[in-house]
Length: 317
Ligand code: LMR
Image 1 (tube, protein in one colour):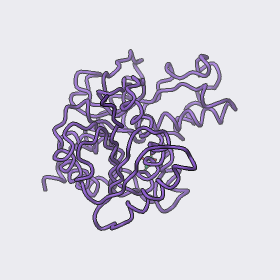
Image 2 (cartoon, protein in one colour):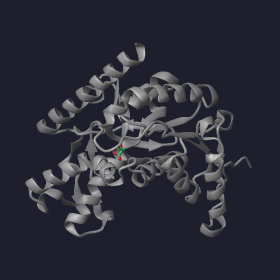
Image 3 (spheres, rainbow, N blue to C red):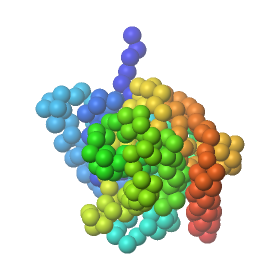
């Protein structure tokens, strides 16, 4: 018998990375490697050991190690990249472009060398441009590189809808597409509560307010935390994607996926509904969008393209 646990590496042992490690271990998704840069010294080892010591209490058997060396990442099945700096109040995600593009380039180069068969989930911001850069640097097939924001944005939207209606979050199905930013596109025809179309339960004005809050959901948390950005929900989004891969769940979820002919995007990463399983992004699901949704999606894609062009300019200068 050659059963073995999946190997999940998490690059960046800050709040998002450590919380993601916690949830992956607690759900016994596999053994976890928590890596941070050498300058953080023993910190990743400390967090990993602390997490291991929770395992008898919580009852999980994942092995968790902390490290500063990519040697420990070798042979990973899935790698979650949380590396990069978070924004502070008053900053946009795009303000992180220059710094995080360089960090993601360095991380991608290491991943390419040490784990050439891994599936990579990018969390670093600005998300869509960072996934594009990760794909470019690793040279991996596009289905093995993706970004987590669609799950996060849709979870925020579902949370706000459940709060508004006073119902269980479990009964809210919803979909947002486009880039992870102010241009994200709600799809009302794919939003329902226990099977009832959302438009029968909420006025279009109120729905627009909730969409607006969702678009600014990351900034709302940054404003409240003051010292960094959200981590519980981003880490939970990653854990759901890791689970889809290591358990070959074939989840239908929104993710930043490479689209070429799909939606006529032309070779960029952007948020779309996908089927996610052991092959990574196994399929991009193409919806018939209304004229308004198409227009909004197109604008969102243009915003992503222009950010990628800016990034390419910065990296080549
Ligand atoms: C989020 O949406 O919470 C993340 O993208 C972090 C941020 O800066 O908003």
